Structures are given as C-alpha cells and as structure tokens.
Image 1 (cartoon, rainbow, N blue to C red):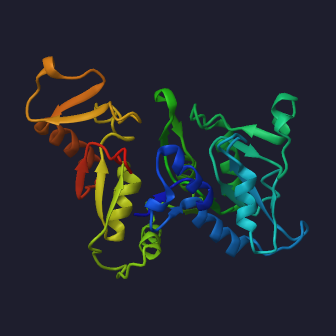
Image 2: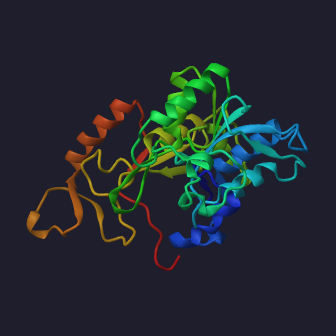
Image 3: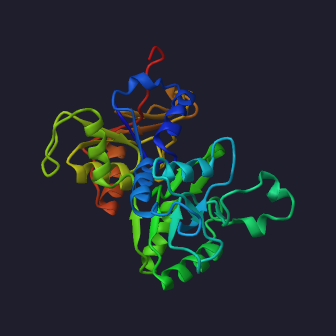
Length: 317
C-alpha cells in the first residue's frame, strides 16, 4: 500500500502522524506521497534561484497558525532544502512574486514570527487572521486575491481540498476553495495533490509498478471518501476507485460519518427493522442507498468503480 494525501505537510512529517491513526509506517511499501511534498519540489525547481535575501523570490504566504500540529516554517524550509536558496516572505502584494497557498487560516507576513505575537497586540501586523477556515468569510481573502490577480501573480496551492471534517462535527474550509476563487478572477493556479493524475502515478512509481499512463491500469485500486478529489483523480489516472461512504459526503447522503471507535457509521441492509437497530449507526436499505448515490453521482458527473460503507484495519494490524 501507499498513501496519497492532500496534506500540505511534507511527506516525512505526514508519515509521523500515521501512528496517531493506529497505522505503522512499515505497512506502506510505497510510503506516503503528499501534495505538500509535490508542491515543495515544484517551488524548489521554479522559485529557489536566489541565495540571499536581496535576490530571493518573495511569496505572499497564506498558511496555518503555529500549533502542535502545524509548523509553517518547517514547510517553507523544506521547499528550500538542498537548493542553497531562500524564499522570502512578502509583506504586501506589491512585493510578491507568487502566492504560496499552504493553508487557509492566516496571512503570514514574515518568515520569523514570535508565537506570543498574537497575545501581544502585534497579530494584525505579523499574522493576519483570514477568518476563512471556520467562517468561510471572503472579505480579507478577496481583497488579497483581487490585487494579486491585477498583478498577475501565479498561485501555488499545496492542498486543493475544499472541506475537511474537524472534531465535534465542525466543517473546515480548505485552501482549495481559495484556489477556486482565484481562478474565477482569472488568476493562474498550480494545484498539487488529488485529483491531479500525475500524483496517483507517483504512488505507482513508489511501488515499483510499470504502467502506461495513457491506458487503464490493472491490479491497483485507490480508496478515498471524496468524489471530487479521490474518484475524479483515480478515474483520470486510469485506476479503479473505491468510494468510502462514511467520509465527507456522509452528511450529504443523510448518513452518519464513520467514527474512530468503529462502533458508529453505516449499515447496509435488505430491509429496515428499527427494533434491532443500534444507536449511533445509520441503517439504509440497498435500494435507498442506490437512489441516494445515483443522485450525488449524477450531480457531480463522477462515478466510482466500487462503493463501501467504511474502511478500517483490523486490531491486529
């Protein structure tokens, strides 16, 4: 197996998180391919030409807040790794050479940020809250994007996801929405990760598989819960897809998301028997499910090869 993730983190950082989800790295012969890693390679090749701050390319940097989970500087330095160059951070649109869309939480205006700045009254000058991740407020975002589009700045998007499920049922708004917004303003966007078929093929290369990128690829299947990223990308790459119902489309289908404890989620039955149904699970007949799926597949214009309620590894894995 190999993991293809739309995380904006470098692959080696994302790998360390596998343990948190009960996975061991040795399970994955092909390791992990992240959109952040592919993005970093592109930036290294195209924007790391200067070895000093005077000739360094400057990025308008939209990213995440510093936290135990997120370390934006770790990503930026990874982009520079091995190039002998640096990427400077633009404090304004006028200074910028490109937009680095790493996250959807803040506009970071300096490389080095004092973690205490948000509590010392300096946040407005150093780290500007986009008010987008939780609120999908386009006020700050649109102002930046409109000025950037006028200047013709290219955008590099490290995570094209549109939404993400957060704890307590909260839905987070991801960088992909900002990238899509920029395209409506005629801005040029370079997206990395799913659904780009090139990144699906990178996974096969990691597994040592020989394949024709222009033909149907047998012997492999991609598993994911996003029609627009997992299924679209797998279809474009010529790979069979397995669509997981208990993910980001569960609510749209009127079903319960699959829980981490394995005790919640979706149960497909021939007929309903409310007296025998367990609390916390969504019970749906095959006929009802086929109707629901046909609606969202037709609306999206996307059709997976297979459908499963959930995907989990056994306790002994």
